[in-house]
Figure 1: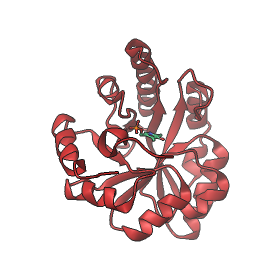
Figure 2 (figure 1 turned 60 degrees about the vertical axis):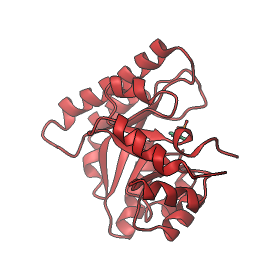
Figure 3 (figure 1 turned 60 degrees about the horizontal axis):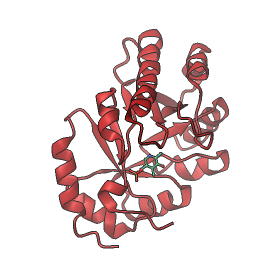
Figure 4 (figure 1 turned 45 degrees about the vertical axis):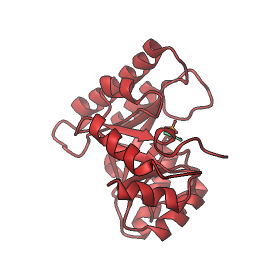
Length: 224
Ligand SMILES: *Cc1c(COP(=O)(O)O)cnc(C)c1O
């Protein structure tokens, strides 16, 4: 891969995104040199989806902000927690408890997002909208001293139907608004709506996203 254009792409993207939208540069499957090129463009927040890859990149570049965006298995939580500034992909109460326990062991409070499943594909992970509201309503979140829920994350169906994509993003945004008004009305740190990837981030922003996770547009196609 040639990462010569990464710096310019970051600059262009930043110019296009509204100032309140956080850009997470999704660097999974791309090497350190790609990340360094993005850093030269002023990028500081990176997203990874595999625990081991995150740990290696965090060890090499510990001053950057690392977000975990992939499906998180309980047995990987211990490796991920010391490396991350935000986990986007919390999809169960059990996972919340595991993150809380591991964060307590190292004396941290870990910021997380609740992942919602609104897409048509069953391959995607996440809580249904009802499960998410029920989780907030259960009061369990307030009992976790080492986890701070900062908002929600979600993915739309991988389709060319932009009306379908927009409908799904609006659903995610509406769950955020419900949680905000019901449970976090005076908590300014409950503020994150993470949605939008390379092919749909413009739609996501129109539908109320304030954090986009963009990989391919910045770094090119991944070689798995
Ligand atoms: C890989 C990934 C992205 C980035 O996708 P691109 O299409 O390359 O922009 C965003 N979010 C999640 C959860 C991902 O796994």
